[in-house]
Length: 313
Image 1 (cartoon, rainbow, N blue to C red):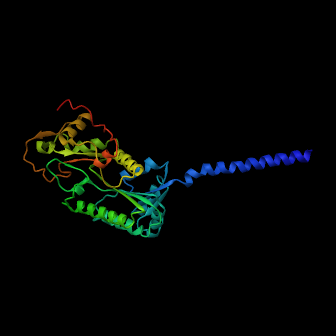
Image 2: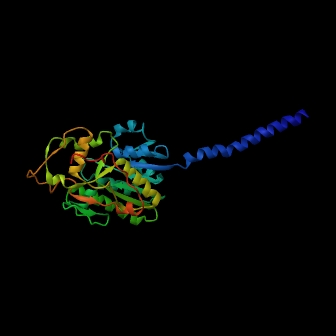
Image 3: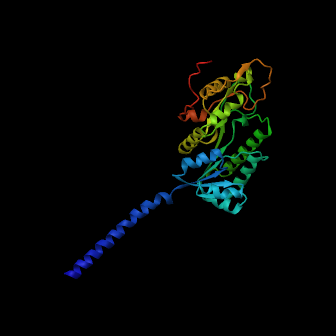
């Protein structure tokens, strides 16, 4: 009798152990199936992207500076030195998503990075979603307040814009060669607004109390917040939106924007005068960026904090 009870207890414990195995596997599966994201260019925007997805994706980041590796490892799961072509190729072959946001004074920085990424992805082994952060400056200098959607043909007017357009074309050519494996988004934002609490203040402080041309004030600008870009990035992945994509808040006159933000921070507004300054070649030009692809897909844009009533107009 006692022997029978001992055998029965052992069988129960063994059965419980067997039943626990699927539970353990189920617990481990989320991390095993977690999508992988490689961020090329871990600056302000790249860091915000990493922070958004750090709990839902395995995050890797690139750097061109070996001294940054240890500090970056505090924020991401893995760091790849761009000059380490072997590790970069291994990471690219195994990743699901690539987010490219590079900037800096380096000559041809956009085309150089586009070439490095696409060459490393030769003989691509698995589907990948690539998002390249370009710029609305790729449309060229527009000074008449025209509405510009994604169908507008770029008119390259400076070296940076030319570098951006060439980089875009490198990615599009790569997608055409690997059309069943690559989904590509090229974002064209305008003025980037970081998640820094003082970002708006930093954008207008240079103009506070300064004489500026009324003509300059009556030109259009657009803000592309990091949060908006990341929201649009998620939306495009979920809804399979590809190609060139404008990402921009509702256009606003520069005079209105500067006045609102200066009031918000209790600093002097610019002094709008009829001084004879030529703003026809100013950065950003005078265009109304229309985000047709996102709007047609049902995407809803955020309202930015500077949108308060301008009672002092």
